[in-house]
Amino acid sequence: MLTPAQKHFQKVMAERRGQADEESDIQRTAHEQILHRLRMDLSRLSGVQSEETKAEMKKSMLPEYEGWIEGTLDGDNGRQDEVITRLMVWAIDCRDYALALRLGRYVVRHGLTLPDNFNRTAATFLTEEMSKPLLTLAAADADADLSSGVAVLDEVAEIVADSDMPDVVRAKLCKARALARRGATDITSKAEALALFREALTRNPNAGVKKEIATLAREVKKLSADSGTGEGDAASTDKTDGTAEPVPEKSTTASAAGKTATRKTTTKTATGKATKRKPANQKKN
Figure 1 (cartoon, helix red, strand yellow):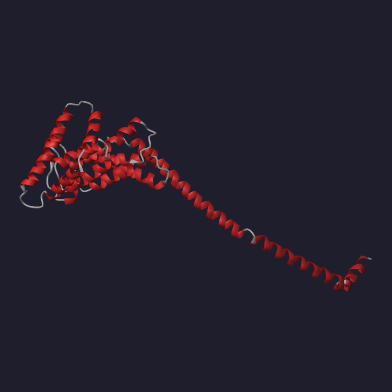
Figure 2 (figure 1 turned 180 degrees about the vertical axis):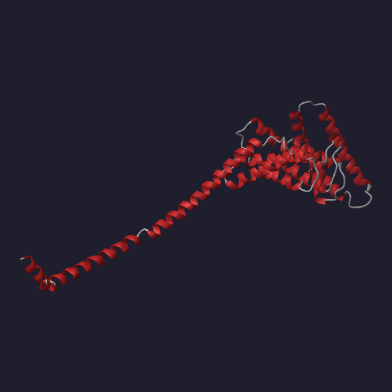
């Protein structure tokens, strides 16, 4: 474990590295020291076969480089550095995603190259390796909650948005981001997942997302229909309630007016038609 003084020395040397055209002897020595530490750690890792054990070892090794990491990111000089690119890989391997994203953003933005044995650009490596754990979990457990991957993978997508990489690799990221949203209940997230699945299929016809697209398309359509029906019913109810009572009021008024007219007619008949009935009575007699 680094002492505070060692961590501070690492940080200062990393910040100064690349600020001048020529490094001082102290700066060169500091970089040589950190490279030597890296070589020693790589040698230890090479003697282990289990990837899980290696990941645990890398997790325990990373704190020994904290000062160098902080100084490099703060200095932001963009100088090629095998230590930083290797530490990005380690952070991904041991699933320290917060650190992986910080280092990944720096490495991709400055176009740093990975060690020769990786045979991939930093952006391609970051995209593929950050997507892999979620894709693996989704394949192993269809009911797994993948929502924690949304923010992480969305940030990866933002970091590599302008980077060139094989379409099949970007399709993996699209698929992983879609799977992370698949279990959401709101229509917005489901629609986003559907769009991402479709992009994955466009970039790679063999992405294995056709079933998910069909299922999500039905779910989105149903949610849209349910939302539309609910609004329609409310409007229909409001309209009925607003026009239900005036109709009987008009009928009652008309009926009352009719009765009044009938009474008036009867009165006239009783008073005015008495003389008119006589001829009728006489005729009958």
